[in-house]
Image (cartoon, rainbow, N blue to C red; front, side, top):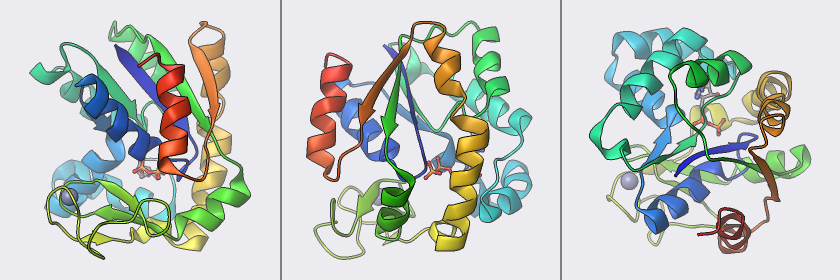
Length: 210
Ligand code: ADP
Ligand code: ZN
């Protein structure tokens, strides 16, 4: 199954992608995680992406499309994958169609902006493996330490309140129109993102019949 998770920053796409990935045994592909890794390693693509990410803007389409194309060509994607954070613009969605990728379902996790703003300050992300946590709703077993790999679970720089406002604006302007794009193709399902990971997983797994 090829799945897209759509939703505002902080709506819980990453966390739910992890849950689905474990349940279905297909990889989660997070362009945000791939980009953060590239920034950390100072690769050419990371250097291009850094300033956009830090200001809450989107990284240029051609950079992200290149990354995604290489990633889904890898062996582990043969039986399907979950896209978390891609596509984020109509041209990215069109590029995916041009690559001949068939998408089975696009699941939009809907959360109000006010809830996002309140929630995102509690978010923690593992600097090593990218796993996501929330100090209240999905805490690590040991504070600041990733359950999965022992890496440091810390606040992302772009989770600062000023940047979150920018990212939400970017989302409404550039990414939210994708819901119509996929609804027109009969692929869209919406679920309401709830304040608990397990409660949300329940509706998410139901929506994808997993
Ligand atoms: P969130 O969903 O919480 O906003 P992500 O980890 O998905 O966070 O993305 C972080 C940042 O990485 C984005 O704000 C953006 O700058 C960049 N990014 C990730 N995916 C894409 C994409 N598909 N297109 C453009 N920029 C992207
Ligand atoms: Zn980790």
